Image 1 (cartoon, helix red, strand yellow):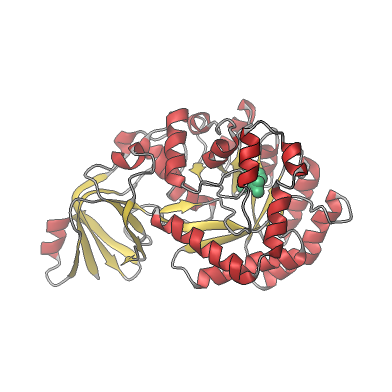
Image 2: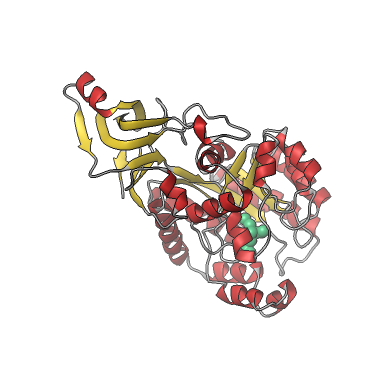
Length: 408
Ligand code: NIG
Ligand code: FE
C-alpha cells in the first residue's frame, strides 16, 4: 500500500451517470487530496493529511508542486497499426480534389492496405509501439486498436498478431478489434457478400482460436458495405461469440439503426445521423462514439454530440487515429474542440474519454477514481482541472500512472 499526494484537486468522476447530460456542478472534486493504492487498485481517496494520520506507517509517494489528477483516459476507437503515410491525400483533399481523384492517384484506404501488407512485422510493431507511447504520454492508458489494413487472411492475422505482440511490450491495455470488413479489397475476386463470407470462414475462426480479438467491426457506407449484407454478417459474427462495433452514419444515415438492432457495443462516427435515429440510439445500450479527429481531418461536420446527450445517449469520444481521415492522434485536442463546437460541459467531455469510452469496450473497472477500480490516472501541473481542456491539448500531462505505478 502507498499514499500518493498531495494533489491540489482530485477529479474523481465518481457518481456520474453512465448516460445523458452532466453539469459541471455534478463533478466531485477532492481538494488537497491523496490516493491510497493497494496492488493495482484504488484503496482509498480523501484529504491527504487525514489519510496520512489515519495510516501512520504507510509509504508516501510525494507529489512535486501543484498538480491535479484525473482518471486516465480510454481511446475506444483507433487504427494505429498501419504502414505508410497519406499526407498526399490530405494535401489533395485540401486542394479540392475528390475522393475518386485521390483514390485514382494511388491514395485512399487501398494505399494504406498496400503499405501495411508490404511492411514487415518488425516495422509494423515498431511504429505501433511509437503511437501507443504518444497516446500514453497524453494520459491514455486503454487503447482500442483495429485491424482492417490487411484485408486478406495473411495480412489481417499479421496485424492482429502484431497488436498481440505490442500488448506484451506495453503497460497500457490494448483492446484489439477485427475490422477485416473495412472494405472489399481490390484483389478479391467476388462480391461483397462473398468477401464477408470469406471473413466468417477464413479469418474469424483463427482470430478466435489464437484469441487475437473478441470484437468485430464493419464499415457500413455506400463506398464500403451495404446495410442488409452487413446486418447478416454481424448476426453471424455474434453467433461466433464476438462483440460488435460499427462504423456507422459517417456520410450516409441509416446504419446506426443496424448497430442498435444487433446490439452493438458502440456505433461510431454518426456525423450524418438524423434526429429520429438519435432517439433510437439514445434509448439503447449502444454507446454513441464521436470521432472529432475524423471531422477535423476531412473538414466534415461534427457528430451531433449535444443532441445525443440531451436525448440520453451514452456518448464516448475517441480519436479514430488513422493515416487517412484522422492523422492527428491527439484525443485531448479533439475532445476539447468538439466541446467548443457542440457545447459540451467539461464533465461530459471527461466522461466521454474515461468511463463512458471504457464502457464501449466492455470495461467497467476503470475510468473513475473510485475504491476498487484500476489505479490508472493522469496528473497535470496546474491548480485547476479546467485548464486541461481550456488549453486544447497544449497543457501536457505531467505524470501517468498505470496500476498505481508512475510510468511517465
Ligand atoms: O474511421 N471510415 C472508415 N475508416 C476510417 C478511415 C480509414 C482510412 O481512411 O484509412 C475512419 O475514418
Ligand atoms: Fe475508424
